[in-house]
Image 1 (cartoon, rainbow, N blue to C red):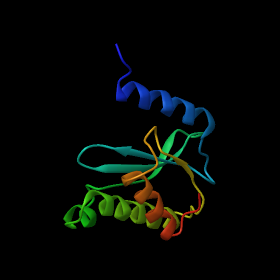
Image 2: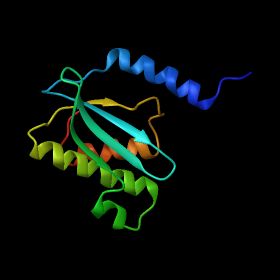
Image 3: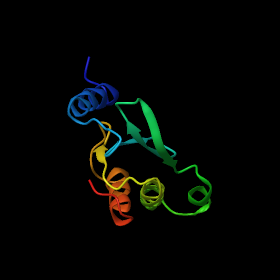
Length: 118
């Protein structure tokens, strides 16, 4: 039996999570990508709390009629705006086992353009 995509992604995810942890000053920016949408959170691992979250299901983003890559860029900008208003400027990027291209790359670029540093 071959290795499934899900098993492979979980193995990569575990490798990343050994290294990437978030704290109050620079939380972990984690991404979940589904077939329909993209979701992102800023997590303080020491306290075990989500500080800020954004997704493609949010009002302004869901109403925009754009493709998924542009939608991911809008989500990146939205999370960066929320983070900057909460006083967070530096984050640690957790791609959650997904390859850094397409929607994940677009989200990261959008967050960087809006003022997050990682």
